[in-house]
Image (tube, rainbow, N blue to C red):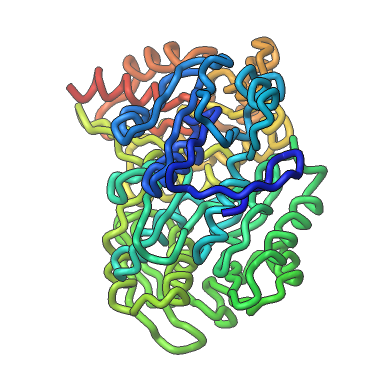
Length: 471
């Protein structure tokens, strides 16, 4: 295995017995890669600022995990250091690694190197990547392909957010943030959609489309690219692909088409046609019309990987979703509590539509925690217009993933509430999650659905509501 360090130097390593130290090991991608490395016979140590979900599992598998960052946490036996995209250049462990002249890779570079050893299946797009990657991995499993996989969430059904299979495929969520997906060279790939996002690392939408175009150009010569037929930007990016391009969608022109979609309690059944020929009858257990598109992409990828029709149909009907994607957290006193990761206006609209269809609540409450002030400011009007299907909206302070100015974080949320009110919505600002919890405890009644939404720690509201309402 060839590893290229950030300084451009190249070294050759065998994963078996290789000691990898991972700075920021608690991230979804990083912890997933750690599990794969351990499964391949590697040794893993790492550090993160706080304990994280799945830490106990990693330790049980043999990883050494430190809480906090210090040079002393980098073992003498480590021969490779991997960092998450969030690690600053003055991190003490990173500085010590450079002092020791160890090769240093970003997580995305490591993922690209692992993918080069396997048949890569990459799922890209502004929205739907995690669900589609997990769905695809599940279809591969039900088809007997036994893939390795990694995506940025947890699936109880799949045993986590990553896994090492015996088959030749690596199914990977391929994120455009920091142009991470440009380190991948898949054989099969999909671009689900392209919209403005991550404008802290992209100049504008044209810059984003250009990056997706570069991603498309990296698909192996014998590969296939699948794109949403109704997404003009995906078509623009696909022009740079040097492989066969197929489309999926609802229109008659789509190569992979959902025919006669019908919803039952928000979950869709439909026929999948491939180039005009009926392939299978699909029935989804996850709600929302957006998941019909995700299912088309996943089914097409599985088909091109060699999966048979019947296992694909079976896998679509048995796929149970992933953590924090419309996750039912609890029911009590006639109140339903659901948690979701949606943090972009398009995702919010799709999720609220799916929730309305699935639960048909008397009132739909949303606790939305904006994620990053820059994103909130840029999409302020779009966010304000995305809550049309909610009856009551609570907005706590912006979750400052990279910002620390409390005044700015509260200002962003207060402005969003003002914009929602101007549109006739019912919204209120509550600076803390605890305030939101107490307000909900006093005001929700039988027949209500409460949804916590956001990429930060708003899930804590759902936790507390379940503890106090669903006893």
